[in-house]
Length: 436
Image (cartoon, rainbow, N blue to C red):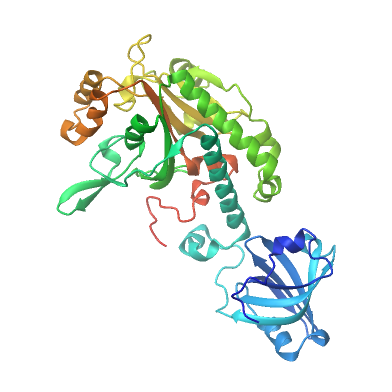
């Protein structure tokens, strides 16, 4: 058999019942294997699922049976046989093998049961083949498709931001610096400011790209490299901004629960939990959030930003996300517009996911007058020359506008109810890991 052609069926075709009684060709990797002197059972996997295949010694040629008996887990192979219903088999279907051929035998697979977390991270390039991680990343893919569909229906344009920049977006202390042909440059913390450029041309836009934060954090929800979805909308105020975020989250959760319930169950998330995500989300001013935290005996004072402990306490018993809004100007980013009706606060919002998962979105109205922006930048002692292009946006046809940033891995962690954010991205980059 030639494995490089289009005459092979997928496992999902067989599991759907389309091939009952038919002779098929199948190719993929060995998920499990066992044999006796008379029978070899090889569970095959491809991108669509796993399927049991049974080779009887009396029903196949000598070479096929020998090869079916010698494969390792993760050897690649192809086979030909008859599909039949078998309730004892995984998925309820089995292939009675007539021909079996190894594509690549490989070495004995180094990952077995009960391996340490560190070992699995060291062998991440192999562990990504596991059923749980494969299903997580299928779901992550479907989530990104759903988000793009949401914005496409609302006439947003997607554009790419630069990854190398001269400008800090969220403060210089978390920048990864690099030598850019003899001058300092940085890996971007956010594509937001470039999305604001695109907004002045196309009104409603979003960017989806990696962001980098040099935060020495060892928590279950921090990464040094993560993916960032950042929409910017012309003529949007704070209320409209939060409404869009709410609609986006409802759309995503309902879509995933209705269209991928089995995959969600396979990774341990009850689809019913996501079906509960309906609006309106509670909107809590920062000042009230501090009072709520203090009533729970948390040691936080007015003037401090909410941290992981406070976010956990506020959300651990909730089924639906909540907004915290109007944070103090003193600890928020320089580009956030001050609330004219509540001085010293900004027109900001953080969206906190329920069940203790915490912040997944941060957004705000942006300062759109040049003099106000320059005053804020001088307060924070930012180098105006590095941001002149950003100031220019306010001097040539500026408009009121708003936007937000969604951390994709934090979204995946909450939506799938994962214990740690490292399983929301194929190759996690954290403070102590940059391999593989």
